[in-house]
Image (cartoon, rainbow, N blue to C red; front, side, top):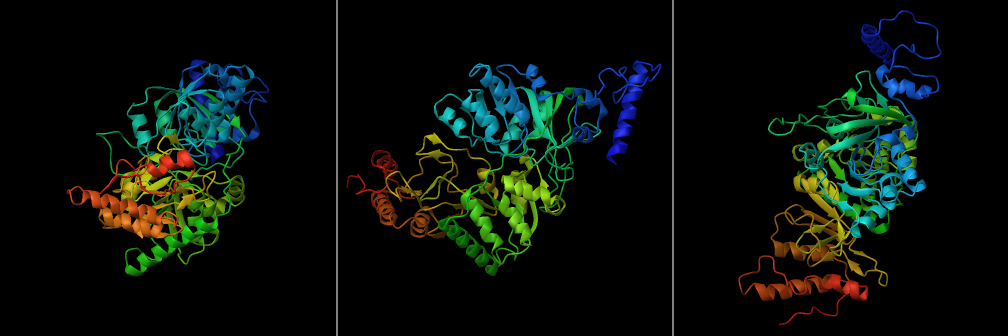
Length: 564
C-alpha cells in the first residue's frame, strides 16, 4: 500500500512538472528522477534507504538535508514550537546540533530562543540549551536541573500553565507568532501529513500556526502509524463536542496535517527517546499504594465504583509508579487508563493481563521499557492510543469518562490545599503539568505524598502536612482524598475543621501530629468566639514550620509563637 501510494504521488508530481517543463527525453542517470525535475531531484546518498521508505511524498525528497544544513534557518530571538510530551516524541537531532554549534563557537547567551513545547523534553535538548544560555522564554512545563536553575535565578522567563490550557492559549495567539515548528515524525504520508512518534504534544497546533516547519524523521524506531488519534478542535465560537465516551473511542485522524508549502527541511534522526529509569518502589511508597487499592476495593463493595473501577490517571515519579505496581498486583481486572503519561508499569499491567486499554499523551518509558515495547510492538500497540495533550487533558472528557486522578504534591495543608510546584513557597521545582486538569474534573481526586521528607540534619525534618501550604496550586475544592504511608483521609462531604482533623489523624507523621493539632486548637480558640472560625488560621505563625526549617533544618517546633 505504501509503494502504491508513493507511485501515485510521484505520478502526480511528474504530471505537474511536465506541464511546466515538457519532458523531451528521460536520459539515463543515477538519480531517482531526471535532473530536469528541478526541486524534485533525489541524489544517491542524500538519504538512507530507511528514510526513503518513511517519506511517501516525492515532492518532499528534495527537502531532505543534513542536520547541520538546517542551521541557516535559525537566528537569535526566534520563537520555536516543538512536538513531544515528556522525554517522548520530541525533536532531538536539530536541538542537539544547535547546542553543539553554540558551545563550539562560544555563542552562549548570543543565540537565544523562546520555546513552546508540549511539556518537558529530554535533558540533551532543552536542559542543555538552558546550560548554554539558549533559552529566553519557556512554556508550559519543565523538569531540567539547568532550566530550573536559570528560572530561579531570574535568567529565564518561565510561565507555568495547565497543560490542557496551553495548546488553546497558543491557538488563541496569546504567545505571539511562531517562527519555526520542529516536529518529530516516524513516517510522512503521501498527502504530507506526519505520523508522530511516542507523543505528539502540541504538534498539530505548532504545525498550523508556525510560519515554517522542520521535520525530523526518526528511523531508530518503528512507524507509529495507527497509534495516534489527532483531534483538530476549533477555537470558539466554532468549537464542537468531542465524540469520545469510552477510553478506546477515537474521534480524530491518525496523522498531524500540515501545509506542505511550509516545510523548509527534512532531516533524518536516529536518536532514541531518552526515557527516565525509575528506582524500585520504596516501602513507604508501596504502603501508599496499598492504602489506595484498599480504598478502591471498599468503593467497589459499596457500589460507588464498578468492579474494574473507572479510568485511572496517574502522574509521574516514584509514588505514581508504586501505585501502578500496586494495581498490577491487586485483584482488579480489565483496568483502563485515561492519562497523560504511560510509564513502564503500564507494560507490567499489560503483561499481567490486567490492562484493557490505555489512552495517553505519551509513552514515557525508560530506555529498557522502550526496547521492551518495540520488541513486542504488535502485541502492545493494540492496547494504546496516543492523543494530543489538548485531548488527554480536556476537562470535558475527564468528566465524561469519570477519571480517577492520582498525583503527587510537594506538600498539603491541614485544610486540603496542595502545593505541587514550589519548595518553601519560592523555589520552582517542575511545574503544575496536568495535575490541575485532572484534579478539578475527576470523579475522584487523590493526592499521594510521603508524610515527611528528610532535611540535611533530620530524617523526618520536613513535614508534608503543614498548617498552611507555602504555595497553592490546587485548592480544597479540587481534592477529595489525601494519602500518605500513614493512612488515607477521605474528606468527601467534610467541612474545613473536620477535614483538618481527619488529615492530621490519618496522614500526618507521628512526629508532627500533636504539633499540627495544637495549631488547629489554638486557631479555633481564637476565631470561633469572634465568629470568624470557618477555616481558622494563625496568620502570624502560619508558616512558622517553614521558617524553622530554613533556620534550624527541621519543621519540629518547641511551641507555636503566639500570644494568648
